Image 1 (cartoon, rainbow, N blue to C red):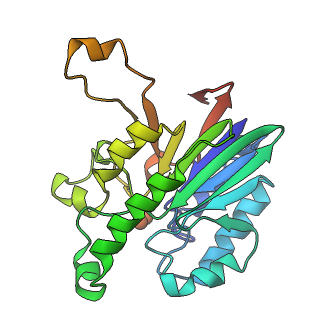
Image 2 (cartoon, protein in one colour; image 1 turned 120 degrees about the vertical axis):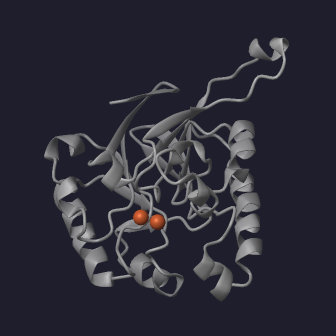
Image 3 (cartoon, helix red, strand yellow; image 1 turned 30 degrees about the vertical axis):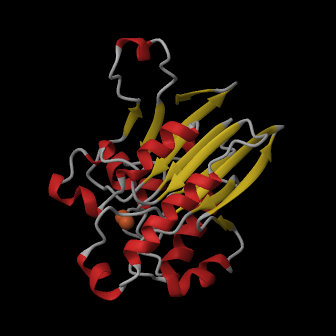
Amino acid sequence: MKIGAVGDLHGKKYIELLDNKLEYAGLDLLLLAGDITENNSVEEFDLVLDKLRGMTDAKLVAVFGNEEYEETHAEYEKRGEITFLNDDATTLEIRGVKIKIVGTTGSLDRPTWWQRTNLPDIWKKYQQRIEKVSQLLTRDDSDFLILLMHYAPTYKTLSGEKPERYPEMASEKYEPILMEKRPDLVFHAHAHKGTKSVMLRKEQRRLDEIEKELNPIPIYNVSLPLNKSITIVELQEGKHAQG
Ligand SMILES: [Fe+2]
Ligand SMILES: [Fe+2]
């Protein structure tokens, strides 16, 4: 199973970075981690969609970023080509493998100045979103469980950004949820200067906990300006490896 993921396309801004045809060969699924367009431009969204459709016929599943404004979400969804997950989940069966994808824009530990000024309910909304994602992150009968987000669920993939900005780029309140619910893969974007991937591990406090250590959880920051290409992950019999 070959999965591609990319976010922070920002309309036509980085469109030439999507050009490597080899990356799309045999792709089963392409996940879009938000900021597909720039400044809520529907025109540039269509440009990106045309570009991707020219590269692959893989199933497209996406979340909204901060560049896709809420009032226009329905317009993007109308395109029908992309399944948008807005605090929601879907289960796909691809070549006999069941993949459950939970999708959300994510939360910020401190809403941005603009959000704090214009959206008085945003603190509550971000908290409720964390609870909703926790509820959705159940494996059910799927072979793989994936979390797709725009904002990061940890500060660990933000390394490279200014530390004082971390709370306005991510919410690390998702970390304990990831440790508990144990998705196989987590993808996010938004941190254009962050770190490409980290393995999230439970902090070992006592020696006897080491024996109980479970597999770490891979978190990929699939921001296009950071990776300069889409990110490819191969899923194999319960294990994954970056291709
Ligand atoms: Fe972005
Ligand atoms: Fe963003």
